[in-house]
Length: 415
Image (cartoon, rainbow, N blue to C red; front, side):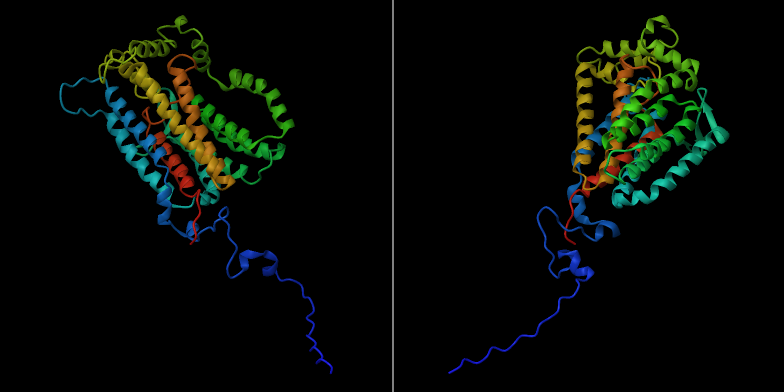
């Protein structure tokens, strides 16, 4: 008659969730995954995953190698020694090839490790650079009235080139700590990182490198963001800082260089000579140029510093307006590829690091090309890959190795 009574189920008291249960799906046997958040492989930090090579930025690598080869050929032509047949080696041409090989090795080394490990190396590298800069006035050798190099016997080391790299990495680490715009405290800490090496470099004297480090740091700070009151104060203080640099931080010949670019004709045989000869070289190239090793300004040695600061004037004379447009286009593609890597980076440190590399190359290209056509004062900043420079070449390749490193790791795979 009566239906059997249902058996009572035991009641289980609720218990507090453990840490693993609170953390969610990532502690489950089969973690929840979406196409937007792929898992990070363990090999990213422990070694080199062969799959990363599939994502090398080949466009950036091609632009870099093409610029380097153009620079080597331009240095060979800038030797000013005519040969009827065969391949004549000159010291700048040979040394640039050697430095290029060293740079490629450094680039490959910079690609194989996880770039996030640079966070731990930023401070030691910066302190080593400051020590070398302090050593320059004591053990450095003087060239053309400036003491900027430390002789190692078989080679010369320029610590100011290392300062560009060390400041860039350390500033990237400091800026990546917080995504919020910088207040006074964080802004001053970042500023001190750049001002310490700049103070040691300006006394060598090396106005160009000092200016470049400040511009790189400024570009990185503006990209990260400043609080409104900090930005307004900086804009108000900037004229006073420029006046201080003009009257206290510069030598007489440096001030004269800046004044000369406004009217080079006032001193055509002195400070205006470089700009005048550079304009003659570029203008005489006309549309198609005079041809490889056919430039009179370079071959007859009228053009000063044709292997370094004014190397692009040699190129313009030999390849003309068309060649210069092609070179500028190649540099634009090069910069665009670097900036796109910064945008695609998966973390703030990688993005800020690559932005610093972008400004490192952008300001050198902009200032040097403006300098050789008389739109910028002569401040001794070379053109990357085109101008001769041992330490600079190694730093250029190393920085691009870091960019390629960030580019390869913009995707994350299942382990």
